[in-house]
Image (tube, rainbow, N blue to C red):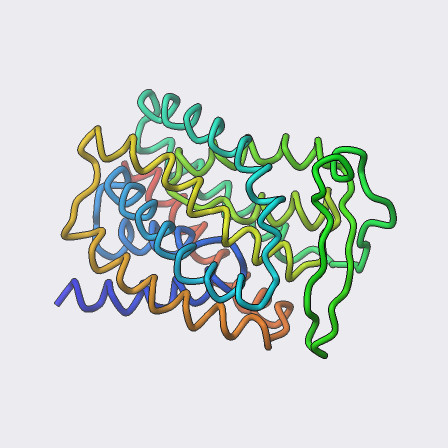
Length: 272
């Protein structure tokens, strides 16, 4: 019975994760720890597997719609993979109660980043690194017209990605909020390109962390199995919906969810 409930929750996590480009970990980890009383380390390991599924389910749809900038994703993954390795090494020395507080802090940060007013401030000039690597691209908007965009502040984007990788390994999340923040805020990519590229990247980041957790024996198939299956279904539908939906509406709903969960995770941390 628990597996069925977990499967249903994971479908919702995958749906929202694909739409927001943040992965399903923000939903899956609290669900496992708060409702199923799973040890947070096992929850984090299962979440990493689900994130790989999220990325796989959503990335194919986004690539088909020409929203993902593969060159940007590959370049920035250099930072996230090194960050994921660093995060795994740190995680070995962090207590479970501390992980709850770190996770709740990240949720609050996510609320601030999700609620902030977005302005259309796409790059007006191509960064020298972007010119040399050919990172600029084009995407199809809702009218079916291709729009060219350039990329700014590539170095800052790489810097953010390193810390996104650390958080991914520590908390079992795709750290998509930081990825989207880096690409949308610092590098000034169009928001839908940022969301799609983040979805493409989070799977690689999670894979770098999940391999280490597998070696340590923290991945439980009875938990990771239904989570991954639910995430695959949810992320496929979410990716298709995101192309047609206004992300602002989803963010407003998601803020309420993040606020409730962050408070619950803080309480859980004090009760450890």
